[in-house]
Structures are given as C-alpha cells and as structure tokens.
Length: 328
Image 1 (cartoon, rainbow, N blue to C red):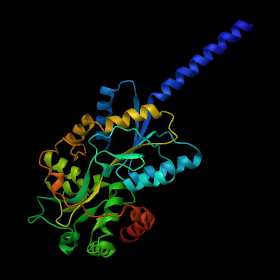
Image 2 (image 1 turned 90 degrees about the vertical axis):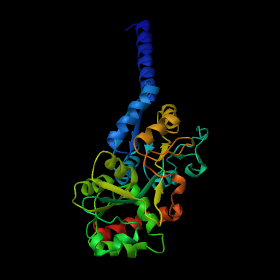
Image 3 (image 1 turned 45 degrees about the vertical axis):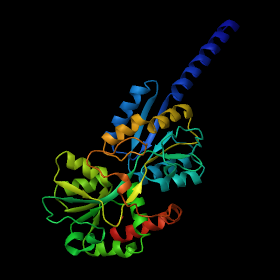
Image 4 (image 1 turned 180 degrees about the vertical axis):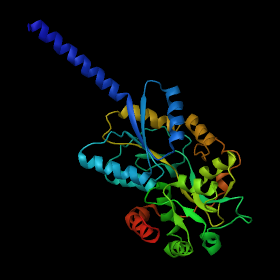
C-alpha cells in the first residue's frame, strides 16, 4: 500500500471513529422504575422536542435496578446514562458512592428547593404519595387512616408492595417505621392478621381491581388512574398523613453522553414534561402547573416526617426485617 493509500485509509478510519463517537454522544440509556407504557410516552414526547437524541429504556423495580447497577459497576462499566427512579434514598446512595454527575447549572426556575439535592446531583421530577386503595364492590365503609388497616377483617384482605422490589415501597416502609405510633409493631400486626406483600405497586392495583384483595397500600396515581379508567376502586389519603417521594432524575458520572443526558434532564424539569406528568396522573412540582383533575391541592396534604439519612442508614436492615415478616 502506498503512503497516499495509507493516509487515505487513516483519514477514513478517523472519520468513521468520529462518526461513531458523535452517534454515541447522541444516544442515552435511561434506567427507570416508571411504568413501561408511561416511559414510552415520555420518550415519544421528548423526541418531539429533541429528535436528534436516541433514548433507550431499561425498566424494572428500583431494587432490581440498583442490583443491576451494582453488578455493572463491579464489572467495570454500565450502559446507563440517566437514572429516573422513585427512590431518593437509592439516589443518595449513588451520590455517596460518587456515581452521580453534579449538574450545577441545571434549569431550576420554579422547582422547589426541597426536591433538589444540595449538590445538584439529582432533581425531583414529580410528587408521588402513598395511601390506601380499596375495591368499591367489596368495601361498604372506606378506611380513613393507616390505623384502620390493622383490624383483622381489613388486614386479612390487604396487599402491599415490597421494598425488596419497589423504590416507592422502600420510602413508604422507611417512613412508617419512623412513626412512633406505627413502627415494626404495626407491620407485624398486619401480617399476623393476614396482610401479604406482592412485588411492585402494579401487583397491588391488579389484585384490588380484580377483587382478589379488598384493600391495598399503593402510590396514589396508580389507584386514581385505574379509577378513572373504570376499575371499581377508590383511593384514600390517610388522616395521619402520607409518605412522599419525588421520583428524582440524575446523570451518571461516567456517562459517555453527558450533554445529551443534560438535555433529557432539562426536559424532565420543563413545563412540558410536568404537564405530561399531570396527564399521567402525577402531582406536578413546577409552580403554575395544576394537579390532575380530582386530586387534592398538594398544599392540603399532610406529609409524614421522615429522616432520609436514617432511612439510608437503615435501608438494608429495613429490607431484612420486612423479608422476615412477609417473606422474600
């Protein structure tokens, strides 16, 4: 091969490599716990605004996502660029392990400071609360409180999501065991009286909507969406208060598509994305965006207090205790 041919080959190879790099930088992989149908709609809406960025989604429960990530980190790398999960405790763990990118100039106008990590490594995208769902064909008198669930005739037909699978359940269990009037004694009483655990919140709404169980502990939008679609269910915001999560979004520090990932995060924090969240049945977090029809004003809700640091510290112990009571 002549020197000219060698030079031409080198230039072509360099061009191909540069093209591959550009393609890689415009493709992101999102690890999420958000339901698959909702994420498909999210990606479709995002691509209307940003057709130049290809989005791949891997979806499962938060606990399984974190296990997958841990295995990938152990192996040396992960294909994930963005995390969108219903678990600020898991996000805090990733932050503490130095796995998250500090997006210090993220667009935060109208976003409450309370849902933003102080170091700008993750950002809440919506408000999700956990309360009680019940089957209206099976229940004549709706429960009004968490305490009502402990009655044998109620607990015997109660299903809840497991923190061994669901990030929202991690937050809910972690919150409830910090409440002096509930704690692990309450969970043991529920189990003694017949309550069971499924996997994620999806298993709860399916069981209650089909009449397999009369009551469930669940995130509000799944119950209210099912009600709106005609399922014989209704939802209660318990009088003692509700646990709450913000479904944070974050960029992984070692992403090879940081700029494209930033665009996705920007969009998640935009009014367009918030309005889509409302259409999917979520409380918005951006000022000026109204809650879904039929939902209470978020300002009227009582949010149960919870120490996130304590929750993170006790995360593994909480999961082990839950498994001991309800099985793994």
